[in-house]
Structure formats: C-alpha cells, structure tokens
Image (cartoon, rainbow, N blue to C red; front, side):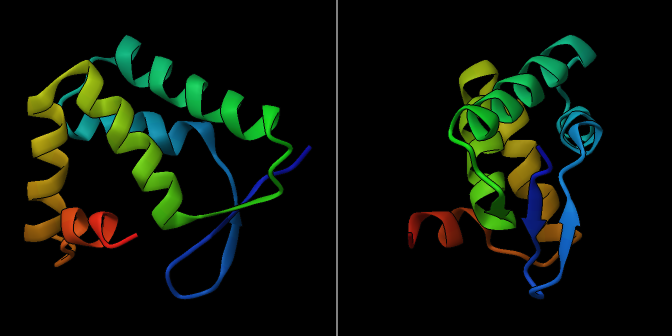
Amino acid sequence: MTIYVVKRDGSKEEFVFEKIVVSCMKAGATPDAARKIAKIIEGRLLDQGVKEVSAKDLTRMVLELLRRENEEWYRNWIVFDAAVKRRKTEQELAAK
C-alpha cells in the first residue's frame, strides 16, 4: 500500500521511510535510533490503513518518538525548524 504525505503547500508526495531516518539523524539521533523511529511510524500508518498523512501529523509523530528517545534530539529539531525553516513547530503542534 502506498502512503502519501500531504505537504504544507497542499502538494502530495509518496511517504519515504529514509526521509524520516535522515531528519532524525540531522537532529542528532543515532542511525539505529533513527531507523527505529521511522519503522515505528511506518508501522503505525500501515496498521491504521492510512492512505494520506499530513506533514504536520507526521512531524508530530516523529517528535513524540524523538523526545522519548532523547530530549536533546527533540530540542535540536525544534531549534533547526525555527532557525532554518522559520517555523514555530512547538506552537504549531500545541495548537492542535
């Protein structure tokens, strides 16, 4: 089954496991921890029969698991989003 990610601009792209792995590693996660997080998320989506997931919901899932693994990795993600992507990720996720 193919899962699509609905991006913030409304466009859709196929869910790519490795994108989660790379994003987690950029936040400081070890390759093993990053793959574990990506596998958990992929498994949840497949188990729920999800055909589409919003980028925000996907980010929420990643951050939840990242925070459980290591608070510093979570903070690194938040700081990167604020500095590079100009997003207020924590506030966006808290709003839902």
